[in-house]
Image (cartoon, rainbow, N blue to C red; front, side):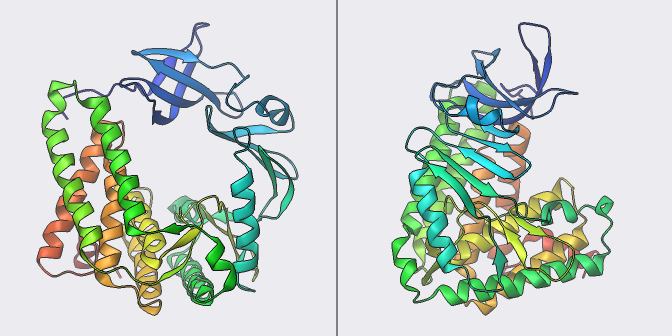
Length: 376
């Protein structure tokens, strides 16, 4: 890229401590960012702000999350979006902290999910305690599939494939059993129109933050053009039937433990009625991104990708809908505050458009390349 990101990789606070910037969210004011930061040798995470390029380490008292200080004393703060949400890990489980009243709907979603989960498919956290702004969950044993795909995790390619085969059977059984379930009607509907509105918010926020960067003009134009194509494609074809959807499915939400116990499944805040393609495409894109970085090998991506496509076929997902939601997931990644990440996702969208024009169907360009180079 010919221009530099406004968000550095690290920042120094007023006491001289260096903090690595772990996660970033654009704030409402253009050029300002909300941060999750970590420091070498210090457990847990902290919150920060970047205002006009100046870094500020936030106090442990968050006015948007008034319960956080008391709950954080019970364990280690492991996830923190200032003013919005925090997760504290304890010996017994996890504490999720919300703004006042913000835990009511997620607690209802958890209760509905407990009813909807088919026996023997997935193990989900149990709600141990909840209030209007706090939910305490039991721990679910196992390691995320996203970590187990790394070559250093010690799994053979065959063991990795068997894990994804287990996921495939559990996922198709779970989603298939949701059709016609009475509890499904209590969940909100995540329609293509809802997806489009969400994508427009992501894109407009990125454009607002980089509107005054002359060097970003080309990337702005490309992002706007790709967004128009993605949105048009989501609305162009008829949607598939609505089923139970996790709403934010990726490989770090799925846990595998030793032994024959069911896989674990985490985080049901966004569970909804949606097309099966919403979850499957999001999961596939996260895996492809891991392979492109690369965090997993092309062969392992292709093994998991093949299982996802098999689940899509079993659930009668239309190829057009799978591709449309995949493009939506890449468009979100294109809205990264880091220019190089954004450019990578925009390049993938360009590759995908070229492959579809050649009639490649479900298969991503990356998967095609992996197969041509000798993958599974």
